[in-house]
Each structure stands twice: as structure tokens, then as C-alpha cells.
Image 1: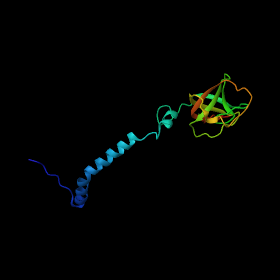
Image 2: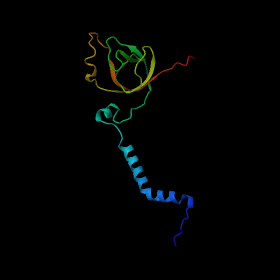
Image 3: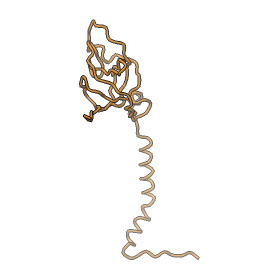
Length: 149
């Protein structure tokens, strides 16, 4: 014998509406999950710029100082990063929220090496030889704040 469940009279109308639209909720939930899984990069170029996925890597594990390079060019024009061992980092692509580097300021950064493309070809003409540098896409960039201790 099947047991009947009683619904309070106050909730009978609401219960009937929920039962009638329950399949609609499942469809809505399925569409929401489908849109989450299918959302992502709009195009292949954006996907390639974010290291094979649509979310940039946040790996600020390296430290360097912003320096001015004569005839330098790149994402921050003539301002590059110099690691303590005098290795130069030439930011070619900036995938961070930082828009300017301050010369002399220390930064933590994350990067991936990239190949030069022609994006800066028409911007700079200079006869000076540039220092050897790693050409990178910055994936994370944070200003180092001195505690003053």
C-alpha cells in the first residue's frame, strides 16, 4: 500500500507549481552547466596567448628590477626587467593588469617564453645594439613593497 504525503493547505498551490515545473528546473540547470563547460576563449589566438587555456597562469615566483634600456621596445616600451644575475627580461606581451613599470622598482613576476612577432616593427628605429634578453609574455606581475625594517 502506497503511503500518501499530506501537504499543508497553505503550500498546496506552491507544491503544485513546483511539481509542474520541476522538469523546467532540470533543463535550466543542465543549460547552466553546459554553458559553464562550453564557455572559454573566443578564438584560438586568445587561447594561445593564455598558455593553452583561457585563464592566465598566476605564478609570481621570480623577482627583478625594472630598468630602462636604450632603444628598448616591447610591452612596456624601453622598460624591461633585470634579474639579479643581470639577465634581461624583455616583456613582449603583457597579460597582467599592470600598465606601467617604474624604473628602479622591484617586481615579482611569472612568465612564459614567446617568439617575437611583428607587433613592434613600425614603432622603433634605433641603431644601438640591444642587450641579450629572454622574450616573454608576463603572466603575473606584482610590485614588491618594502616593509622598511
